[in-house]
Amino acid sequence: MNPAPIVVHRPAPDGGRQVTLHRDGHEEPLGLARSDHDLIVFLEAAGVIEPDNVLDDPQLVEWRGARPHQWHGT
Image (cartoon, rainbow, N blue to C red; front, side, top):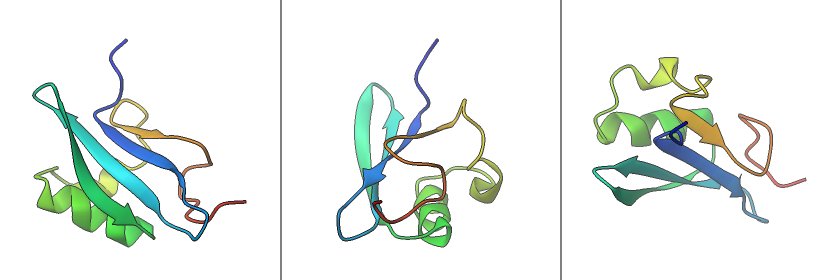
C-alpha cells in the first residue's frame, strides 16, 4: 500500500500542524495549518481538486499523531 500523498503531522505544542505533500518522489512542505480552513487553502494552492472533499479520505490524507481535525496538542 502506498502512503497517502498528503500528510498532516502531529500538532505542535503551541498549536497547528505541519502539512506536506508527496508528489513526484519529493516531499513538499505546504505550511503550518491551524484549522481545516488553512489546510484547504494550502491544498487548493497546491492544485488539489476539491480539497474540502478529501480531508477525510485516508487514501489521500494521513493524519499523524492526533485525531483528524485536531489542531492543538493534548
